[in-house]
Image 1 (cartoon, rainbow, N blue to C red):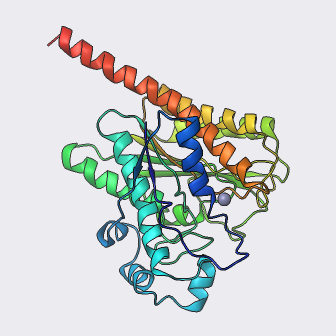
Image 2: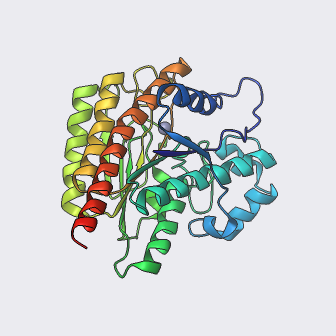
Length: 321
Ligand SMILES: [Zn+2]
């Protein structure tokens, strides 16, 4: 299974900054040790043209040239540096590469070790999100798909980060080819929420059983309303009970069951799936990384199924030319 990283582009943060930048490198190191069959590759940066499938030219220019206003920069939450730009491009590029790997060539499942920057709107960044990687990957895959297929590519974005995917919801507000599903804490950031195609609001302290029941309901409704050809899954680690910001009470097992349910749902319909890490702010950073490692273990099992399917299809072709 291929997974794309961008953590070599470290975004310099002032001392005491609350963003856990080190978790990305930790995840890559632990993946290499714990799930060695995951093939890690460096992500290419998303180009201005690719970003412009989602973002306004003036916003892209302001980010690239470092001319965002103080208020805009403050809303993002990172100081501007050339490294911030490069890292944001690479993180979007990683989701693009994961989506392409999953969708084309029979891989079925692929990942971005970062990404899930769902608070970014077309014309502004917010909440540690500069560019909206899932949105860029969605639009680019639709364009690439459209070159070879007559039917448009419908994409479901399943956002299980504990915060609402407000930027994503707004970007695809009037787009019938994209279904945005967000399951998030009702009382958590962002406080002015947007309307996704399906929003599931969770109470503070929500536990495994209540969460999994809500997920079941969400997937049933998604299935009734939409028929995607690609899933982009934001596997946020921040619903975990050890998270500083999450306000929910999911255990490691609960989150693993969540992941299994999402991968199983996509697999049962043979829908390729690309996933990103989204948020995770564990009081202990190794808890966040553990949740993510567990997601990769689940993902890898489903990737293997895809490879067996591809092998069977090829054998069938050989026996019935
Ligand atoms: Zn989050």
